[in-house]
Structures are given as structure tokens and as C-alpha cells.
Image 1 (cartoon, rainbow, N blue to C red):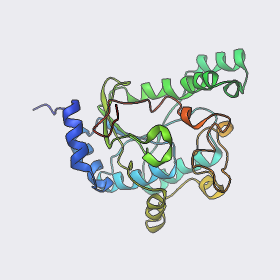
Image 2: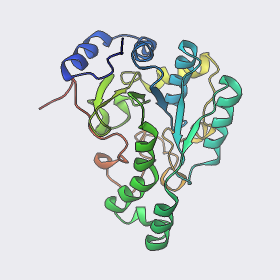
Image 3: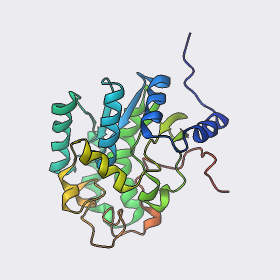
Length: 250
């Protein structure tokens, strides 16, 4: 019998109620039961995804993990990939941007066009991240992310299970949406989970090297991402609004 992989809005709302107050492992276990092997964890090698990876690996060691290698990542980010290989026996799958698109971008606009305007920055993200993500999700029925509601004003309505209308209506699973930063780090420290060394240098959020900086005391945790922009627009296009659950506002 073929497994039903598509969910409608009513089912998503029911799952949101079901998983309210549940631990992330319960969400991950449900996702694996429903979608494996056509499910993968999208990881930018930050703390949140490391927590999910550790949880997922304990539930199913065959968990698939992919990352978007934009060609401009920090050296410490590559180091985390090797730590994952050594500790979990998982080879993180890297998806790169199309060579011709990157060459055209740099030749026509230079190496720092993303700092000229929000539009130029989103264009760069489109080339280096959004298009590769589309390829990474091909053939999948669901993907898992490390998004949390307290990370940004653009993420406060995220549900634990969503319909990703931008990617063929596949399911997007966000097990840590209601976790705090403290919960993330408590998990990492008590279970000796590998993490990106940049976090110890004041980087709560890590992306491309030219677009990420350490934050200052008292700054918002996303202040180090595209710090020349206003908070309301700080998304790269990977996490556009999905079909919302009962948490949505009109």
C-alpha cells in the first residue's frame, strides 16, 4: 500500500494541536515514520540543526543531511561537516550554485553587490542558496529545518508542520520552533554535540562569511546577519511564508 505523503491544511492544523507541548523528538519520529526515506534535514551547520541531527540520528541513523555550499562559507562551517562525519558517520551532502550563474553574478555585479540594496542581496541569495535548495528538495516529500520562532520577527508564526507552497507543496517540519536559545545550548552541552566554533566567538547566527558578523552585547540574535538591513526583511528566500497553521493571523 502506498504511503500517503501529502497533507492538506486541515491535517496540518490537527498536527499542530497534536504536537503542541510535545518534545522535538516526537515530531521527528512522526516525520520519519511518515516520510522516510524521502525526507532530509537541511543544515547550515548551526547549533539548532546540530541538535536536530543528534536527535534524528538516535531515532534513525540513516538520516540524510544536506547543506547549501554557497562558495563563501566560513572555514569553521566546513570543520563542522567533518565532525559530523567522524561522530555520526554521516556524509553531509553539499549542494552548490550553478557555475555559470555565479560567474555571471561576479563578472557583472562584482563581489559585494549584495550590500548595495535588499534587491541585490536577494538576487545573490537566489543564485547561491534558493536555486540549489530547489535541487536539493527534488525527490523529497518533506524536509526538516532548525527554525525557531524567537529567532526573528519574520518567524514568529512558524508551525511545527507546514505545507511548503514554494516547493511543490511538500511538507516542512520545524521541530524546534518553540525552543529557546537556552534549551538549544543546554542540549548541546549535556550531550556533547559538535557545534560551529563561531558560536563561541559571538556568532549566534551563521551564514556566508561576508554576510555574517559577531553581535554586540544586547543586540538581537539576528543582528549579525545582513546587519546593513532592517530586521523585517532579513530572510534569504529559503524560508518564505508557507501555508500557515492555526497560529496564523489574518
